[in-house]
Image (cartoon, rainbow, N blue to C red; front, side, top):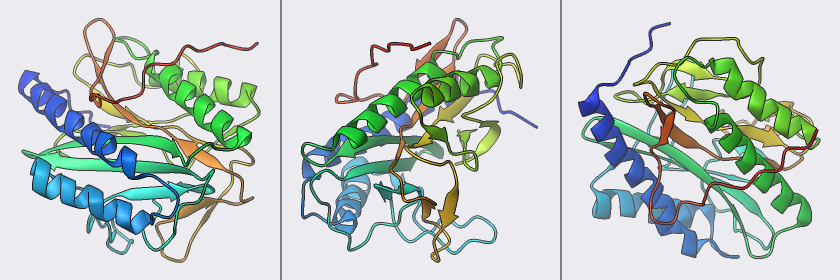
Length: 268
């Protein structure tokens, strides 16, 4: 496993592109209302990236080996869609929960982030899942420091999710990022503390737990991209890109309207 340690030039470029990715989410937030389609949201994001930011939407035509090209500029995953939801004709309804996942390219660097949104008031179940998932991401982020182990991140996330009766999706994980969309290391959202690679200053990776209200089992839809919960339960995901600093961490995917770090109550 070769992990690319970023230098000061890389880090300065990553700060810029990660902020730009987060600003797309700031921009799209007011448009998330009942009746708008996920395809319309994607178009708005695409035009903002291209015309306002002069960035490139990384997902558009992205094609890992064995997959068809991804056809849109964002991933929008609604309700029981865990990840990689392809925007289209689906109209948002009151109480829907959705994740919008943004990755942009600027000057050869990738910035990657996602947020959860709730359409209007939201259900009690949906709001609780979204909040606990947000807390899980932040508990993972809090483990980031030189000398700590990657397993510490997964352990913190898994412990909090399972304490609230939720399950962790295991087939998808966070990843290193920089001049490539996906680099080493893989960041699992479950695991044992004190295991795995030790973190070093200059490592940059995403923490992006996918957490289901029901079973952790998944199903892949015929488009080969969309991943849903097998039992049709709700799923939620949040994502930040994080830099390991000399003393701890720096969250790079921050902009004017990024949600604040939560106050978390740990239950035994």
